[in-house]
Length: 370
Image (cartoon, rainbow, N blue to C red; front, side):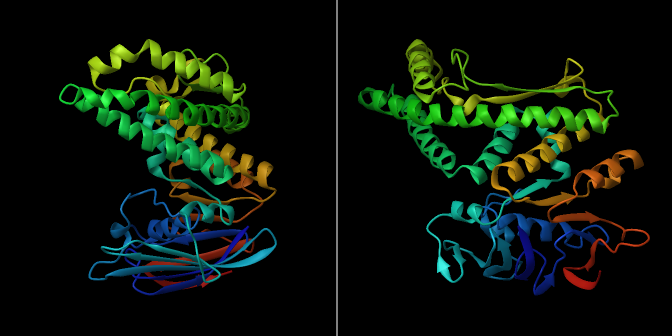
């Protein structure tokens, strides 16, 4: 899998940009606030039409512009693809592959998969459960389209049920359809839990090994999936998970009416991490937090390669500057294979024959060197 070239027109601070990339390591360097992260954001957008920095397409469009365009030449699964993304103010975006309009953004994930690590990913360890659920959802959606469908269905039903719980006292008739929503949420939720549990089991094995090597054997990272309390076997058949979810809904029905919120389902799931037996969220140092989050991302990358036979495109935003030399060397040694984009404030020192450097200034490509 390879991003051969990208052109940007009206995307963030790129008024007009075009560059070709190495199939190996690409170092994007320049001073702060020049557009390095914006370029990674555009590349990441190709894997599912989602930005890691904004939920609104209009935020991605340059000031004083009504439209933003990302165009990319991609090699994937032994084929060549032309990807086109058109973002508009006040209108729906348009996604095309080889000039054919896509029905859903998820179809992009069948062509391009990316794994991104950026400074904000420290939230994977230190912030609330929503950050970790988002990490799981983005990763699994790229690998399992059925998961994305189940997740979308679950969130739609959750939104409707939440409205019922909020308004039922004013309109008791709403409770007549509660059972229908509970049934749908249990079926979709069982699939969500099943996929998450299996992904986390494989992720944990790899992340533990990476953290151990990262730390020279001094740190043991444990990763655990936490879901609805009475689900007996998240790794088991979905019919069993469904039955457990229905039982949980029934036992929490009165509490939900009183709380006016949905208390049952995988929308409260979490990914628990510990280092040497202590909660990473509570006790990990800044360095441990960074390497634990990076271990999760590198483990995700390896799972993608194992599952698809292709390395996903790895995007590392300002990662190496916060690591000591030994850990920098470990990261660079671990990411052999596949295409990699790394941002930094300085060009790599010495001979860089194994990749390409791109100097970015004020949203423009100043120069590029192999």
